[in-house]
Amino acid sequence: MTRTSNPARRSAGLTGAVWTVLAWLAGLLFFLPVLWMMLTGFKREVDAASNPPSWFFTPVLDGYRQVFDRDLTPYLLNSLMASLVSTLLVLVLATPAAYALSIRPVAKWRDVLFFFISTKMLPVVAALLPIYLLVQNLGMLDNVWTLIVLYTAMNLPIAVWMMRSFLLEVPTALIEAAAMDGANLLVTIRRILLPIIAPGLAATALICFIFSWNEFFLAVNLTATRAGTSPIFLVGFITSEGLFLARLCAAATIVSLPVVLAGWIAQKQLVRGLSMGAVK
Image (tube, rainbow, N blue to C red; front, side, top):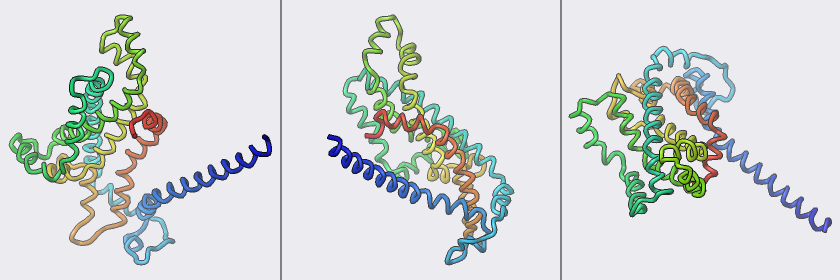
């Protein structure tokens, strides 16, 4: 048995090593554009626009200085407020909706789920004109609260589907035991469900935050100077004078940091949440 098991173990170990190498190569392939963006931010405009690209250069901070000279802070604050508040609203609305569609399913819950996901099938550009006219009549153009409402509506269907998938993993025996002990719905959700689905909640929050932070189309059409978000700030480096590639890469690196930090902080919860069944 030992002689037959050793070749099998070596074969399994070799297969695992091959998959590990392929995973690292795939990771490096996806990270290469990000690395190139970060390096380009430390170049002079002449080196950044050279063709073929210059691999060896003297790092400078001119691009970052020019980014901060253009007052990036208001755009970052607008993005942060719109992303955080809309994500919080999405979680508050999606959790009870997912509860009603999973643990205590309402009548025709399949139709309800299809209705939620069908809202994502409409192209945003098709809804832009009525949204613009409505926002204009309400006097809410160039207002960060307009983005908060729209981002909440944009991310809510995905959050409901994800949270429903997480809640389906909760054993019904726990909920029945809580009901027998006299716990009402709010106590059951707060003390039993939320601790169990916390990783899934973190994964949903992170995905909604990323979608809101990266959203560009609605922001560029509904905001101007007061409520402009960080993607709008990046477009300012594409002018009639040309493309300031080094400054653009420096600004893109700074704008990407909040999302990268959020993903790094929540990476354990994200992996655990996705493994609970959100992605099937």
